[in-house]
Image 1: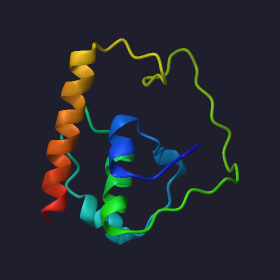
Image 2 (image 1 turned 90 degrees about the vertical axis):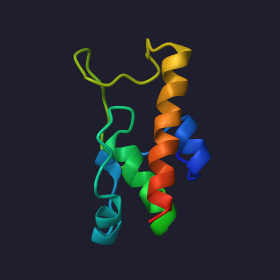
Image 3 (image 1 turned 120 degrees about the horizontal axis):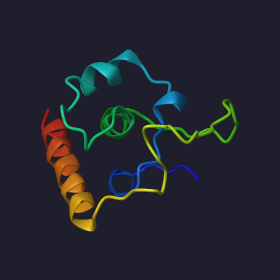
Image 4 (image 1 turned 120 degrees about the vertical axis):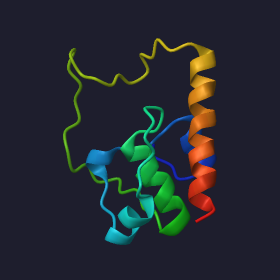
Length: 102
């Protein structure tokens, strides 16, 4: 189930870029995108929308989502250490605080 909430999505991102629709003003607020691999574009846009817009998760299935063995990102198959995961969350919070000061 997809859920809103800044803290919830910092812990486990539920935003998928291929499934998003948003107004240009959200995109403009999201610029510049953080130049850090810890924050994906989908998470950044979702967190920006949490601050400046209204979020809605549709239960209607509009795409067929599949992963193949050569995909770049893997769901629930992270080989990152706990320390790296914590570091990543700290980076996200740092950029989020900068966004919220705008």
